[in-house]
Image (cartoon, rainbow, N blue to C red; front, top):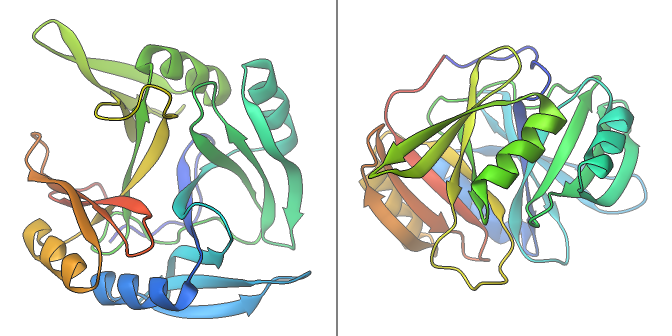
Length: 256
């Protein structure tokens, strides 16, 4: 099982969903992934809902009046230092570093091509305590307007190593390794979007059957955006939930 007790700096460690309808999101993802939920009040207003499998934290949800979407968190040793580095590298700072009670310290950015992401300096909460298993975060992929530019930005910020994969003389995909050499996600050229559309991060969740997950998502009010397809490492599909948040599902072998 993909249990985690900590994350190396520069590693994707957490996902939370911003949505306008928490009840609908719980019904959809609970039905799709078998998640259980526990909600707690946020000091100053609002509710933060933990998503769990077998007692393990795997993701979270929060009600926000903005475009629905999944927020990607990357572990850092120091959120303030990461913010200074991000600004020097051309990031736009949406939220400067702030404490999340005793759980940790975070900040929110957009990279130079508009992809939004968060950094997480863990204290009491490391992020996901289980990954890669069915119903858990499995992969994080940047749909990039300029993959080479993006690779340089994130390598400068997190120390990532990137490895391009070519097809017919063109870079079709770029894998990411964190500073310890562990596979950590990927970058690919964004296609089929308006010219002014920003880059964006896409989360993948492991499923036992891609085809069954697609049918279940549609039954629950979601939509199929792409696939199912087999790019080589497994079987995937890109979906949206009933509120429009986009995510992908993956059927195949994963790391521990």
